[in-house]
Image (cartoon, rainbow, N blue to C red; front, side, top):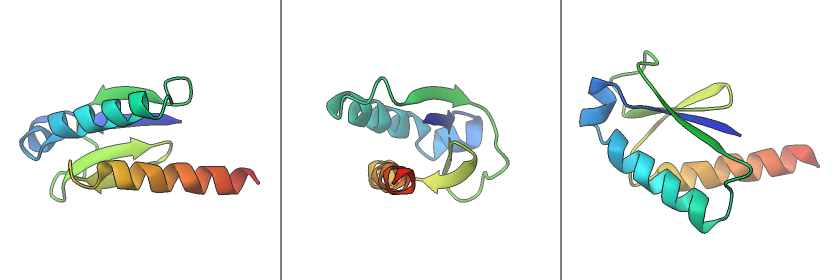
Length: 83
């Protein structure tokens, strides 16, 4: 799974650094280093709603409080789709 987190100016002021830290901690704690490719990027064009995070081909608006929950949901969806 490829995850890109916007670190552009608008997302930066909305907390992208904390989002990155939370995702990195989640990936490490769940030992998902081999499954998740984490990258930073710049503007995805969704600057008004939160920090932009692209997971595979979908863009989500997240906060440091909900990013792990949304990531867990995406992982469950992906696992269920594999069955």
